Structures are given as C-alpha cells and as structure tokens.
Image (cartoon, rainbow, N blue to C red):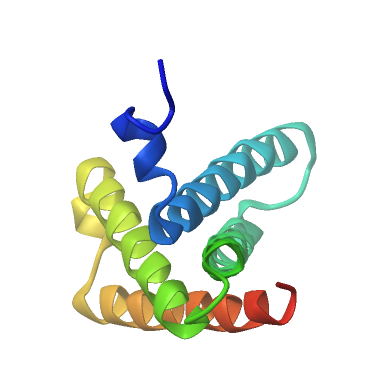
Length: 129
C-alpha cells in the first residue's frame, strides 16, 4: 500500500501526534522499568510517586522535543500541543483506573507543569534542528 494514501502514515506526519506518541512510548517504558525496579529491589515505595512524576515530566519534555524537531519551527506551540495531548491521555487513564485519587488542585497543577515542560522541550528541540 502506498504510504501517501494510507491515513495512518499521514497521521504520523503531524508533529503533535508524533511527539505525543514518543512521549507515550517513553512514559510506558518508564512505567515498566519502574515496576521491575521496585519489584526486584528493597527500595521503599515512598519513592514511587516522585520518581513517577519525574518520568512523566521527562516524557512530556521528550515529546515536545520530538515534535518541534520534526516540525522545524514553532517549538513553543508544538510543545504545548504535545503537552496538552499527553496530559489529557494520562488524565483519562487516571479516571478509568482510580477516579478517587484525582483532586481538582492536583489536576490543575499537573496540567500546568506538563504543558510548561513540554513547551520547554519544544523550545529545546529547535536548538537541535
């Protein structure tokens, strides 16, 4: 099948979709590595939340970086778009898994920092184009 006519290949040409996909892959890999790490070591689970938040934000940064690198310009806009999509995806996952764990302040703060870090990743991605 010709890649120009396939809608899946056209969708991956969009920098926001590309960056969000990269961020999600990074986030899922971090979740898998963290679960393996905490299972096989004696480290307390108290460290799980800060390390998980760090991995989540690094995933957002990476997604913004990839999007702006692919686009070649408008890093702030593409990075913020990736951050918003990445944030919405994880909020939907949290609502499906554990809706009681979300508070309004946590949702707003997480959204603000996700978009901020992803926009910073988008700006940094322009430096390496």
